[in-house]
Image 1: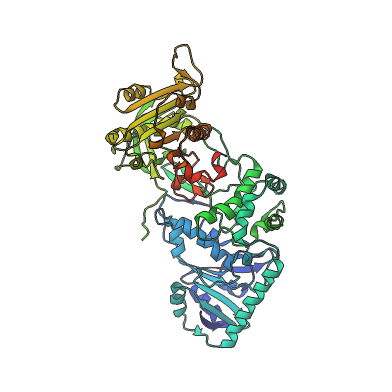
Image 2 (image 1 turned 45 degrees about the horizontal axis):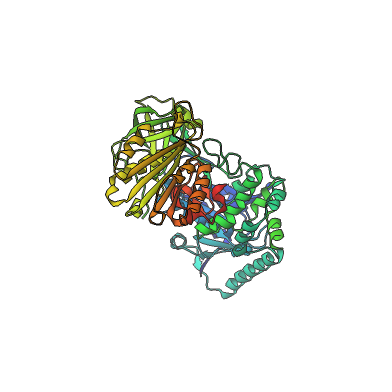
Length: 330
Length: 274
């Protein structure tokens, strides 16, 4: 992997300069927690580096909650998203498979994707529910993001991942090739120590090769037990980096509005005449697990759960999917 | 290379005629603004301006490209509005989507078609396609059931088929009225009456979910193999593009991988009869 380094001071100046031509979103810690914000020059010093993970998943930048998909759009300013954890980068791969499909590509998604530079951030340390490594997702990007950033003392190190990332970084004269082997080994040590933390805190959690079989063979009683506290609010699907279901809504003039939807909502699968395979709450609850761990893996290469753990944090019924898997694996 | 077509944008089609088929079923004759072709068994998303969109399989011949017929049962929000439409209005069409009937695989075979209720709509399109290639088929048998004689759609179709070489059509009703002197019973009961060489045949089932299930079970009992049975699955497809998730049936998107499946392709999946 090729690295570039730049002093933190020069990096901040570079960001300020980039704000003239880019909309930059970065992960910022505030009194409500950590999330992406649209950056103004005064915010640059507040950007948080290498801390997992923003409350919002990356998909919200590419799949708005609601958008008109029949009218022409003015070209948007190019975007940089800075500080993306690798779980979200991997989650985006599934969206790419779905929305950039050869036969039917979504031009709105594609334009946003082409217009955005993804700067991932190596996770140093973990949050309570982080479990990416259990699904073989590393806590740092080495593919699929354009660049990855690591902040070490007064230095910003950037790992070059794609051609798009390389082209971008080469236009920043202050970024110099990093040859210091010591610094690279510091980065590798940090990566390893985060991996160790993940492995230790997720002992007993079955990996992605096993989860499909476990949910497929799970008995009705299990779904009944865990769905008892579910209120079908859809927070888990809304916050999930890979849940992408939507509904097309008609507006006068044959316009269509694409609105995010969720299999957790009643009526999601209702057909004309009233039949509804997901009428029972526990069936809807089970559907999400089957979709992520059994069905999508049978259809797509990319993971449908990257272990970000946000669905656990978002659940108002305190349903912990990792508890379900640990029980299933017993 | 990805194309720049907007996959969500419908083309316009003029509604030129509305045919009453039964109390709840009407056929809408549409002339699309652009040439529109489909393979029999594929479906379209048909929209009422500003109201909504729903998936339908055209009931007209796939050989006709200048107009399109869609037979619609009044059964939900969008279809209620559709039933109020008068000729002259514009409707929206997206598609065609999905995998239709592989008629080329029927060459040299006897084709048994089991249909129920509004399921006769896609079947009529299939029958037109089969009539066109009848020289390459051994025979075609249609077994169709409706709730009552009044609910039977396309009544002239049955006489026409019965007078067409290689075709025969049978009807039954769940509940007879005073004028009915034909068979009474669900559609599968007609299967006892027909003569067919199962080994050299394929079976097509299209109807309400309950008929799909018991139709498939009956055909298997008769000796049909899993890959000889074609099922047209029903789900509420919203996008038709394999994206929105509404039609997921196990690992399949019914809109893209179907709606026509062989029983063999989907039998491992317990979700199909859910």
